[in-house]
Length: 269
Image (cartoon, rainbow, N blue to C red; front, side, top):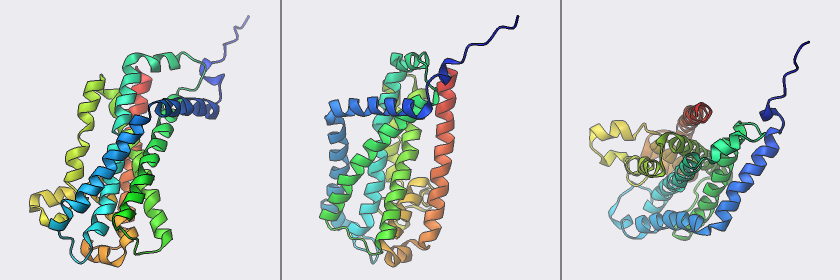
């Protein structure tokens, strides 16, 4: 008599409903702790105001107004800082045993990380929207068309998705919440060693070799040319298509590498 294998528990629930349930769970946590969202918004807006009114008068940006130069950079960097909390939340769930509990439930394993990523991406967009409003309030203007501006917005959201995956991987690999917090502050030197705040031409030659090709600079320059047009292209030395293409290559590479690391670590536990 041939034994009939029982269906794998992971197949007894569909992927999309499971992702929806876990995304809703993560969003409810954020709703019950609104200070997490408020602190991220305050942090992003504070950077904008400091560089607009404290440092702005001392920094030159060629023929561009400094507010038009720095706002795309600050919005890009703000996306990175807004996703740091992802690493802490994932590390807390990982160390606390929540992921082990979810693995024992009849749902696809991929739903766990997918739900977390969607919820944290929604949080990142929630930080980006008021930051853009403040950028316009302090003087930033779009000097291209609205289609290009929407393209810049889409690029920022995709960059946020890449950093959510980066910090999901950090949270799973760190081993503790404290370690995840420490590793996450790598965004600080990476953001300052870029074109987000000042033109890279003002940096030493050895530093320019890094800053001009690292992903933050490439995405900032893509957003800058999409929103500022010809003045930004003249200052940076290349056209909009050049920076957008490079930005998309960097974003896709980051998502593939860090999503792969996160999934591999999640499955191996």
